[in-house]
Image 1 (spheres, rainbow, N blue to C red):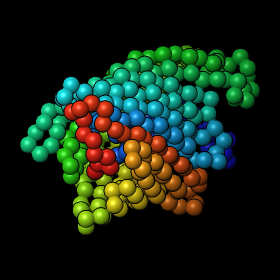
Image 2: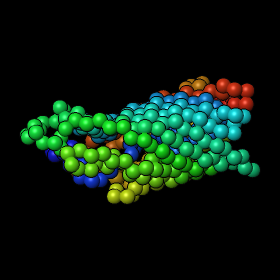
Image 3: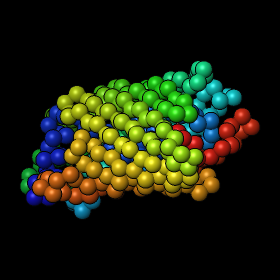
Image 4: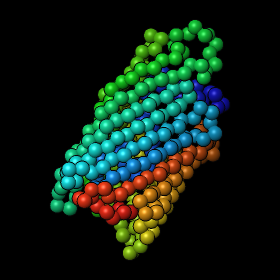
Length: 299
């Protein structure tokens, strides 16, 4: 059953349908991964490492590792950043690096940002990891190709709310293998928002929603609700399409922030009865004199 499931996933991607973007449950902790307009939005220097293993226990399951960093520059009028990521499933691996730029416009009670990102994505597969009946089949040759990527995003942010719209990959990407055209990516659209409610001096309630869509794939919605205690500890629950459910935990000490997500299927009868884990380590601090020095911000 495991091998049949993995084969179905690979055939789906080879059969002319683009792969999905990596899923990030902690998108509010590391928004730069889905929206370049977030660069420099908190007027500090930021860096984060993140790792996700999906369907843990399934052989050759999807895994994603990324590093991101961004900083507010030019008297907090702009942000610059860098994203490096690697996404693996089965015998295929996508390695991507992007430079990020955002321009910020101060409004009465909020900041509006426009962001751009550009870089390269390197696609590779290792056919030696597969058991191939016909070793001469050109559809299973090992290949490596590098493609250009560009993306954009908009962001509106205040102390109480954040709203973002983005397309991290504007250019559909495909390669040719064995006479077949394999789509690596299609345009993925992200719309998200969150609002903070102060229940008391020490407790905050933060509901959030992330909508994700692309042609040829099912529409996806993440619904989150979390509580923050004394500005240092966060616990919350979320669901993805009411089919996957998860627990989010987060703690911060001085300039460091550690987040963990545990996901499980909503039904034990699901064909994907495997849990997923996601962990993130973040760091924030003021570097320049015009940077904010306060930590544990709402966003």
